[in-house]
Image (tube, rainbow over all chains, first blue to last red; front, side):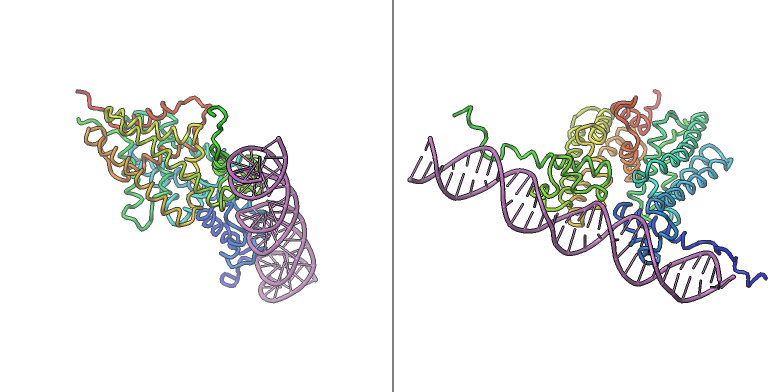
Length: 201
Length: 201
DNA sequence: TGCTACCAAGCAAGCGCTTGCTTGACAAGA
DNA sequence: TCTTGTCAAGCAAGCGCTTGCTTGGTAGCA
């Protein structure tokens, strides 16, 4: 019964997941509006009408991509935030987690689509998203608060958080995986830039 | 003959400029692909075929918008860079100039389109743009070098410049003109974040 | 037999762009 | 002063094509 049983129902619906992955990649590369259903279908070896068996509309595909991106990055950064190391090490781990989702091969298309294509979501989905996004950003706000308490930073205001996330998110525009810098190096360099040097004893 | 002469030819062709402005606003709001010729024409009170009297293609409209944005921001920042003040004051003036183009009412649509819609340019136009962009970024690189020489910053590497421009450019995502922060305040806050405090003597 | 997952075909709407023509302003010749 | 010709600027209509999405059918498995 072990080998022959092939999970009767659904067997995990991974054609649906295939579609989400392909949609993510294309939305990232060409943008939501410039990506056609025929592009997506072709990328998974289907005809143009078939994706609609799995998704009601193109919007729903965008929704799936964007939610995937946000939950993945939230999970990764939350894990880093609770690692229980020193404030500096925790902060750097959070930077690495955020950059890993944004630039790493698995999931970068989801995160990048999240950053750049949200304006094409209709209001209902957008509202759902904003809640999650606020929760995510409050994690960073708390991290800055901890850094200030540890004397590693002078400014833990909201604007400081926005500058920090801006520098992080903008890496999508210039990072090349085949370039000379690793994600960990970039994270460390940003930490150095933002954190005050502990004053010479 | 003085008063009656009404500048016989052309009288300044500002319908073309109207189209560029409208295209810039719409490209910024909805994205290039999601903006239709009919949108643009409607915004300036024309029928859908008429903009093609002024531009050969929709691409050409994007080109005009993006070039306008890049030359404007280059001019503004170059002027600030040569103001001959102290390194710190010069740097803050450059930040203000960049943010002014990006967030101020006149020209923000051009700059924002420049940042977000360049991928829809065809390769020929893109190459033309990259030259100008490299020149612009080297201005910032030089500014960082000066700051380091003045002992105001520890890191003047290319990555440091990318972080800085990332924080700047990301302001488009969160700045609201009716919000509580002025552009000058934001510039000052970013300068504070990035520059080392001169050590207490 | 029924259900899942897909295909073949195509529809209505909308797309960028072209075409032939109109309109008002103006300058030069008679 | 009238006519004639030219020009910039735009309109009305529509062409060929693409878009998101629908529908009826069916192969393969349980």
